[in-house]
Length: 82
Image (cartoon, rainbow, N blue to C red):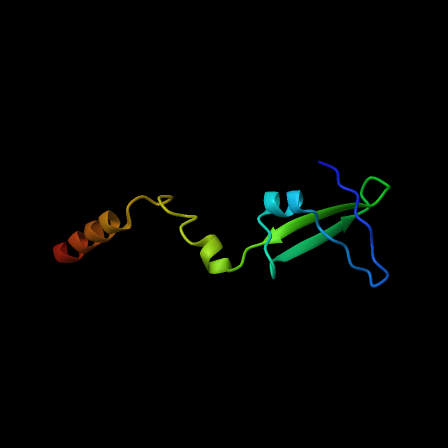
């Protein structure tokens, strides 16, 4: 989707409703604007930032190392043998 934005005299732009809905932006949302000139002409990437990094990252690694309780019980069993 390409959208044409107009820059105001104060350097502000309005993000259209369609784009805000796709990105999940609300009033007060933070975004990162990245500018790159890798291909000769400048390109811009607009990325929404999570409201809370803790909420964003919470549960991301769940299940990667298996069930933690099983590992703990196995280790506790090893303690009793020594």
